[in-house]
Image 1 (cartoon, rainbow, N blue to C red):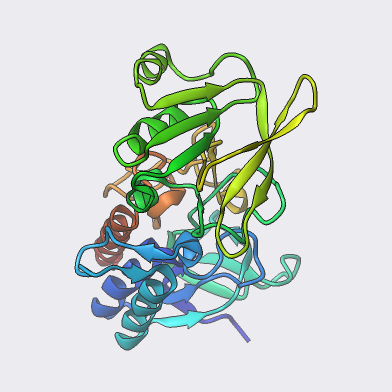
Image 2 (cartoon, rainbow, N blue to C red; image 1 turned 180 degrees about the vertical axis):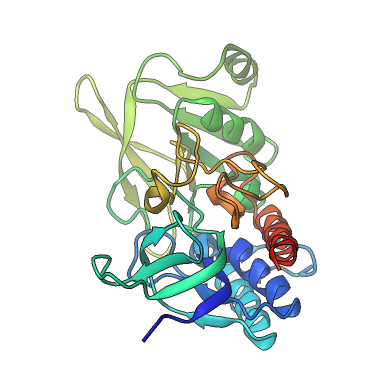
Length: 322
């Protein structure tokens, strides 16, 4: 039996994918959304907001809302307008011919699980973590990977930032608006960040640097109460009295699935705007939105906006085909 052909298949959820689903469903495109699986370490259902506690910067929620609750509302809205949401993880795609092929589970079968006239990729990105015990458990409880998202919660706290690149210094400088002090922990004795970012950080009285150190372990029960740092030269472990830790060692877009088919930057982020529409990729009929193609803003609101754009681009492209 031949595989049914969907007008639009959305790979990945989160604010981008679910917003794309809302717009595609309201355009009578009957989208199929493959949201990933809870057991996955990446592209999990709901995206990174599922690991966030209070979200206070998403418009329309003046009292704030829990990240999982916000994504639950996104999901309900997409389903209300007719999106077919399936908790499945894509294992293989074939963009060489239309309709495109999408496999879940066993990628070796000859026949794809689904076929699609157009595809919206919204698999997101994952923050790189330090790999210390209880790190993931304490995200949203003193450990964060986004200063713009969570800095407000650390007013008059002593906090630390792990990293030595531009993103780490950007986080540290932003956090000085709220924190009493910011300690940048870096494993070397010099920074990788650009000269202008270094100059700004060195000139800020609230920022101090802990050279040749790494985060060794985290302290606290339900929330972070302190960390221990290790001197990489002597192996000596000492406590550091902070109540917040921001991990800024980079992000990895979830694009391994698309290597060799979609054009991407050296860092793995998908390139968009390559055809008609700001979200178009190098393959006609394949669009990308959210953190999988955005390494600048990485906010829920910008991801949702690009999801809207991807759905509109896909709708217009489909109209042009028919």
